[in-house]
Length: 384
Image (cartoon, rainbow, N blue to C red; front, side, top):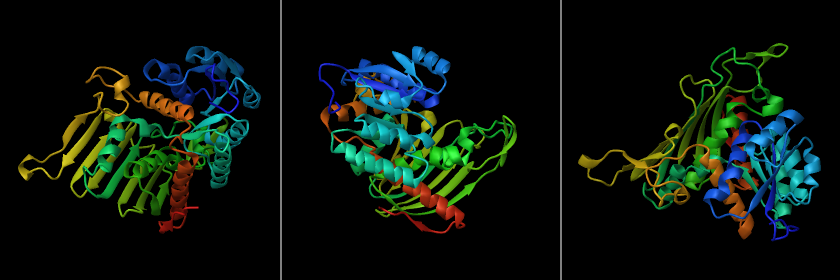
């Protein structure tokens, strides 16, 4: 609950943004209570800039009403939670204002477009926390059951000491050089390209799975298609199409990261391979219900990667869904995310990933940019 919320009414939710992420988050808010034991919520209002389009989206996505002024929504006493699905350049302004207004805040990754904005958001979150107001960053892939299981197996020592990680996140939605210009291809609105958009997921996964922190990086950025058709003619692309990085972690592991939005044939392939001293794990988002496990302690004549179909009630989050063997999908990660956020609010516990964790990812991304600008020079990731 928020400090001023009465316990005899549901938590009122406002979502800001109704496009891709707004739709995914709306689906989660609409369904979470049907499967998980969470505090009662009401989808109060969906906010967007275009009055007609946001009204249509609100009706389809299950919101009671729509609005175009997010500032006015923050003044409402019936709003307890603000879910920010707007583009990154808007995150800091909305989140800081919402926290100051006493609203719990969930904000999509990456935390913000600049380090200054990210620092300001963390300061606001820390102050709000003293008033019982919670905040969280939406790294939804933490809530993939197979990856949640991988984290448990690593923590249990099933693969021994982690030595190296290979992480790639490859997409091809910008492979066509005639794909039109969007806000995601402009530095002033997106902050960065594939780096902030999808490398942020890969880096968060590496640190989360290993429960470790990146300390040093080298990086390379590249823009394969330097211009795109815009509404008024050809426009220059001012962000990267692809990025590569090598990461050193505090615990001694080394990780490689490769991301691209022009990798023809890869639709949404987040691949992770974690190699330990006694075993290995492998995952591909395009096979979301599977985790591959190699047990290096088995006799050599029996060794090989085994397929774990992560659909059993004993697996993370799966107790709420279908009978064993019945698969779930990408959209379920957002439902799990909302479940965890609501649980943290109701218990007063700290949700994860916190804004501080989001800031740590931003520091790594920023260090990769610095390294790329300095021709792949080693850059230390600051801790403060």
